[in-house]
Every structure is written in C-alpha cells, then in structure tokens.
Length: 365
Image 1 (cartoon, rainbow, N blue to C red):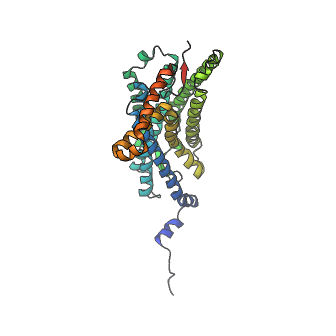
Image 2 (tube, rainbow, N blue to C red; image 1 turned 90 degrees about the horizontal axis):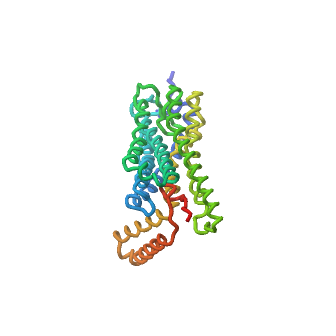
Image 3 (cartoon, one colour; image 1 turned 45 degrees about the horizontal axis):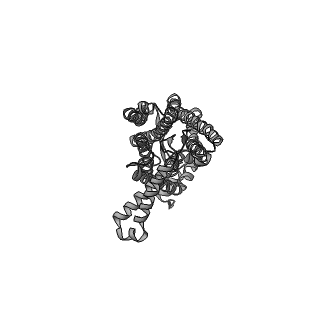
C-alpha cells in the first residue's frame, strides 16, 4: 500500500556506511585538532623568540654557531608554519571516502622533508660541537664559512632529493590520508625496500652521529671535571653542565623520534597499522622536538637568556618608552651590561663544546 518512509538524513546515510573504526576516529577529531593547534602555537612562539635573539650576535657564540642555530630554528619553525597547517587544511577539505590524490602526495612529501631536515640539522650541530671540542686548534681551518654553509645546504637539499618519489601520485609508493593521525602518510608497506632505505639513510646515520659525538663530549667533560677537582678548581666551573645539557638533548631526541621510526618499520614489514591513538602520538611526537630544541639548545644557556631580556627591554622602550621607564628597564639594562662585562673579565677562559656554549671544557693552567 504505502511505501516505507525513510527519515534518515544524508549524513546518517553516509555514517551508516562508514567502518566503525573509522567512525570512532572521526569522533576524536576535535580533540586531535586542538592538540595540534596548541602544539603548533608553542613551537611557533618559541622559535620566534629564538629568532629575535640569534639574528644578532650573542656572547660566546661564533658565526658558524649562529648559522647552525638559524638552520635548526628554521627547520623547527616549519613544523608549526608548514606541516601542521597543511595537514589540518587537508583534513578539512578532503572527503574521507576519497582515495589518494596529488594534494595528499604533495603534503606527505612536505611532511617527510621537514622531518628529515630536522634530523640532519641536529646531526650537523652535533658534528660541529664535536670538532669544536676535540679539534680546537684546527677548528677555524676545518669549519670554514664555506664548509659550514655546505653542511647546512646538504641538510636542506638532500632530504627533498631522497624523498622526491613520494610527491608523485603514480610513483613507487602510495600515500593515504589517515583519520587516526590527521596526516597524509606514505603507505610504507607498498614499497618495503624504499621505506627501509629511508630509515637507513636518514634516521640511523643521524642517530649514530649524534650519539657518538655527544657521548664523546660527555666523557671528555666528565674526565676534565675530575681533573679540576684535584686542583681545587671545581668550584670555579659549572657543575654537571655536560649531564644537564647533553643527556636531555639525547633523551628528547630518542623519545621523540624513535617511536615514529619504529611504527614506520612495523608498517613497512608487517603491512599492519598501529592503534588509533598510538599512531596519532608517534606521528606528531617528533614535532614536539621542535619546541624542546628551543629549551635545550637556547633557553638553558645563560648568554641567550641575557640577550633575550635585552631584546625585550629594547622592544618595550621602542613601543612604550613611558611604561619602560616606569618599570626601570633602563637601569636594568645598564646593570645587566655592567654585570656582563664583569662576568667576561672574571670568568675562566672557556672553549665552547657546543654551538650554544652549554658544555665547556676548561683549559687547565
């Protein structure tokens, strides 16, 4: 008699055909997007503060050091200014039922390039630190301005060359948009050989360089600290600087990057994916290293903090001189300038063991 009436809306019709696991991932989308936005803001603001300082000279930092730090800051800033906006944009525009397209391949290429450039930049910083400590007399001849710029250029140009196949829709590896991580990800299981070669050419070499260089520096600093104790000079040196700086740097690197690489290898070898929130965490965890680098390579250094305070005071003077005078910025700047001169005159001569002057080997008289 009467045809059955269908009161379901188009949205309900679409959801009814969606896989339950996919539907669960979509319900968590707002929480994931909020976390990504907060992390992106933290990374961007932290690196903007760093740029305000290192664009001019900082006490104890050489020209080469500033070049490497600018490269690291640019790579970290790309997390918040490029990777996160691109993937959020794709997650808003792309229909989840669509297959891979050219846009997703391009975004996946940008993601992989920024991640790889960051790892290579950290490795070059560790290499420069190693040369500064163990070859102090040959440093000027080994780390010339040309070689420094070549290392930085390699860190930025080699990853795009290595990852170029990801950008082609009909290339050697497939790309899909993951609703679990809200990222355009290569399907590593579609080309196991290429996927494993990426880890062998990017993650493992960078990890070996960083581990070897920083471990040697830590051991050297520890031996020299023990020698200084014999001469009753330990009280004049900074206590446990090597452990306070190098250990957090390496711990943050492995905590942020190892889970992502392990999930990549697991997906390539087994063809299976990890649980939803595990995938989300391991994919976005490396971006948090972009914020942690601001702390371990910059904020932990006294010269950087002092210069940052001076920059803020100058900005306050330029924007609102009356307010700056009221809070005493001028007197504070003069006091800080005089104290800096006294510190330079009374401190023991140091040779930087890192580009951020955070770990020093003191020359014994």
